[in-house]
Image (cartoon, rainbow, N blue to C red; front, top):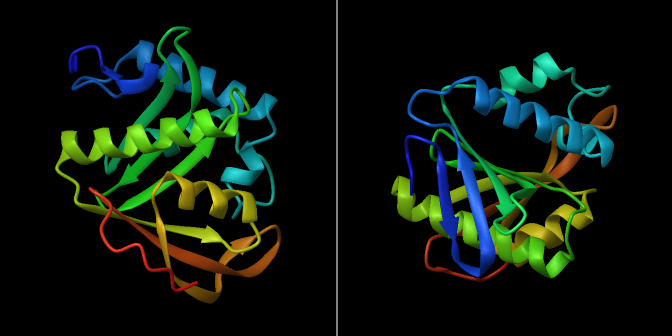
Length: 182
C-alpha cells in the first residue's frame, strides 16, 4: 500500500485508490472522472436514491470528500479502470456502487477484495448497509459480496419519490454468522 499516493494492489488483479493523507488535485480529478462514469452509466440516481434528481458534480465532490468517509475507488489493476467504489462511513456503514464495466462475477470479486482490504487496513470487524428493498439487483450484489441480511425495515428510506422498505445487512470480516433474517 502506498499511503502517500493513495493506492494499493489487491489480489485477483484489482486495485484500490483512496484519499491520500493529504488529498490533493489528482484525487479530486479521479473523483470527477468517477462521477462522469457514473453519470454515463446511469448510476447517479440509483446511488443517490433519496434525491429527486441527479446530483451536480459539486454535490458529488462534497459527498465523496466528507472527512468521516473512507472512500475507495475499486478498479481493474491492469487497465486502471474503475469498476465502482466502496464508501465506509465512520467505520461502521458501507455504501457500494458498481459500474457496468465488467461481468457480474468480476464485480462481486472486486467487492469482496475491497471489503477484505478495508477490514484489514482500517481495522474494521463489521460493517452495516441499508439498501432499498426495491433494489433487488443491489441486494443480490451485497449478498454475493459477503453481506448477510438482518432485517427488513418498513418505510425506512426515501427512494424514487416515496418512503420505501429497506433491508439492513451486515458484513463481518472473515465471514461470521451467515444466517439470513430477511
